[in-house]
Amino acid sequence: MNLKALLTLAFIFTFTFKNYSQSPVTDNTIITGFVLDKETNQPLAYVSIGVLDKPQGTVTDSAGHFSFSLNKDNLSDTLQISIVGYTTSRIAVTDFVSGTDKSIKLTQQIEQLAEVTITNTITRANTEIIGRQDVNKLVQVSVHNKKTADETIGSELGMMYKTKKENAILKDFNFYVSSNNFNYIKFRINVYSVKNEMPDTLICNKQIFATAENFKTDWIKIDLEPYNIKVKDKFIVTIQWIESRMDKQEKPITILPVSLTPFSKNCYARIASQDKWKKMGVNLSSFVTIAY
Image (cartoon, rainbow, N blue to C red; front, side, top):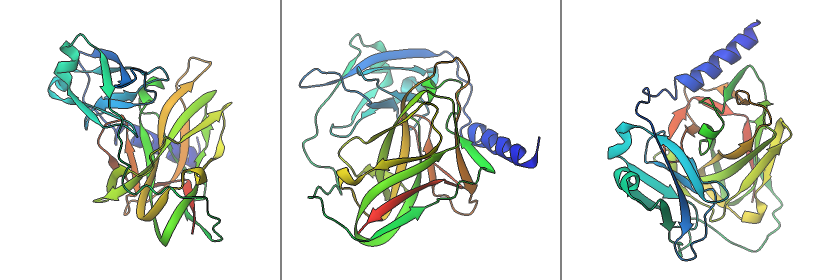
């Protein structure tokens, strides 16, 4: 095995097992349920649900159903349920586990999210690319930190960007996939404001989805112009794993190239939908184009 392969494998191992190490899970309990619109009783797809600040959680499927594993240490914790357009809800884990009603109902949020700007389409003559366009594969990271793709649902990985331009609008977001053994992957693109150098509030009031089909690798480009997302100073764009399909029963592989930045931690990740964010000293091969 050559040096390049050794470095790649070593960093994938470090990313997966050091940055995301967990205590052994004992006395597992699988909890299942549905998330519904409180007013219409209709199921809500792709809602983030999980133990607050803990690595247990998932995202509801297209029918509003969820299922994930808890352990005995989570019984004193809180479930958090969130999606754009609805008021975030919190429920004590013990209340949900002991209750007979396994449906969670969310209330639509009337007020507009902070920093969202909806405007008529305006032609902007100037553009700027911010981020890493290099795809050197000497060092890479795996999106998957567990054995199955189902356990990856809800996880997020992304980068902080900074612009000095006034009234900048996100034109597109691009990220590179170097290896992929999935027939189909659905991602959600989340754009956050920044507070204390961490992701804070979603700054788009619509869900933004992207797909990768037929084992796609190379650059994936997401057009953001229809959403009229205004950004200023620092902002964070993440890729969240929503659902996927594999025709073969094999270990999931989705690999992204990175560069090491040990003195600058502008990469953010969490392995469950309501987990704490962690900062890492790498730069993903990803960039945004802004128009101004």
